[in-house]
Image (cartoon, rainbow, N blue to C red; front, side, top):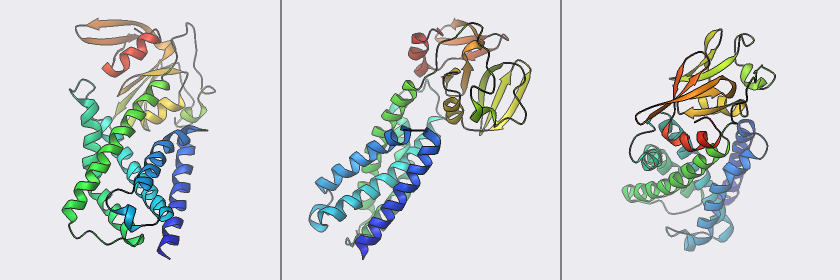
Length: 275
């Protein structure tokens, strides 16, 4: 009975996450996101760490670890995204602080997930919650490190195209994004600026604030421009040049606006001809 409930929970969970990623990532994107947690879950299911090898049969053990890893992977991913948007690109050790901070942030709810899954699977409850917390924190740290590295590679692969002279952007090129605006695009799209939970959409005719994540906007405008900073995206046609002030690099747009370039984006921007 417990095994049946666990299998049913896993199926419902995977279907829900798959549907969410399908909407956010498009065809094939959600498969790439689900690949790492499924692989890690299967590996742990085969190895059976923390006493699960002897305590659970093969099939329910695989289901148990797939459920635990997948759900905690999602929690870690959400936490990492929040931290990633708030830490400066120039912060030393950022590549470690983001994933480790995310794993610590979700360690308590993740422990609750493991405790609940263990009860459903018929495992003896761990009387030492501090020891269980330590094991879960270690698991979350591994998940966060792997997931963060994968997301950084994915962001690089989805970088925009080089500037094209005379290119004009209209709402037919990115209908999903321009549907977010209160009225049809006025003038030429220049850049997007992240302001707390909002995005400022700057055009040659003015600006508008919309409720949207920078990650979603950059994905919907793929091929139209390039994310150049954790808080900035620029349209390829709006780039007039580049300037350097000491260690800081900035892009000069056609309206004279100077947009900062994040350290982690410089290599890609050079490859694309922005710098």
